Image (cartoon, rainbow, N blue to C red):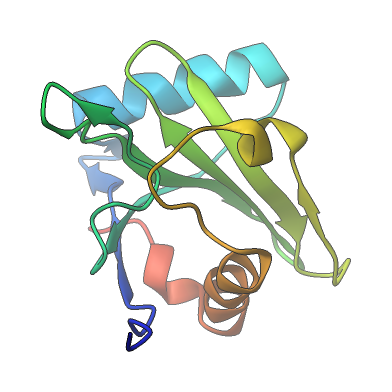
Length: 143
């Protein structure tokens, strides 16, 4: 069987209008809730779209759940912090987080324990984070 190439795209969700930053209600509320629970601030929010739509999904009623995979992050003057989450609709599952300056990615046991049809590998998450670290404009706030 031919191995499917890992393909994804990044959709920045934050937009600035008249000095206010906003985003789509569901991802924005999720990010605010997680930031409050975990105790961090964020100034970047993006959705990941995967060519393989089974990634981070569960089987439900003969179909897939439709969970969002979100990047919640902070761009500082001299560093970038990123976290990767699965928005399950009733909470979230942290996948991994990393600082650009640190060079290492912290993966969560909680993600490894999930029963998704298809999960991201550490290499895939590393590739996504590295892509953003190399070009942070991918998650810029739209104006």
